[in-house]
Image 1 (cartoon, rainbow, N blue to C red):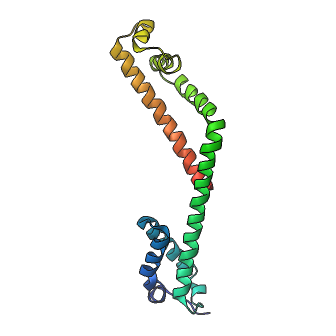
Image 2: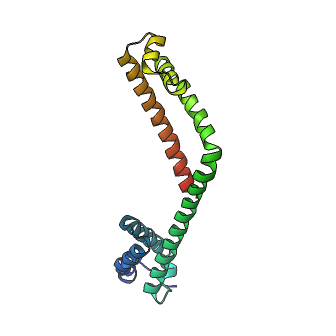
Length: 173
């Protein structure tokens, strides 16, 4: 079995990188995705370089590898998109609002005392700013600042949670 070194790999496989890229781009449309795909395929081809030495039509083989990888990515993207659509249509309308409400209530409960009271009165009890000022004996500016900070904090924490969930869905989808 003949071995393929870096020099032979460059002359027999790497020479097709532009064709591979153009083909990947025609399937994926996004230039970065196409570039990433070619890099990934090149890495795989390098790892299997000894078996690749036995392939007679290397151009056809590498283009087929690009096609297979692109199809896998497109299929994966479609599955993720379908799952997210199902999640939005089913889970969000049935289960997610309750979970999100419960989560928001827990995040509010973890806020500093003033922020917690102001946000609860404004967003849960739907008090007017003037009523909150009166109830908590605070200036309007203090109420607005505490409300703004509380909302930003809750929003930031929710964003982290949803970004994490999205990464998990994309990783597992």
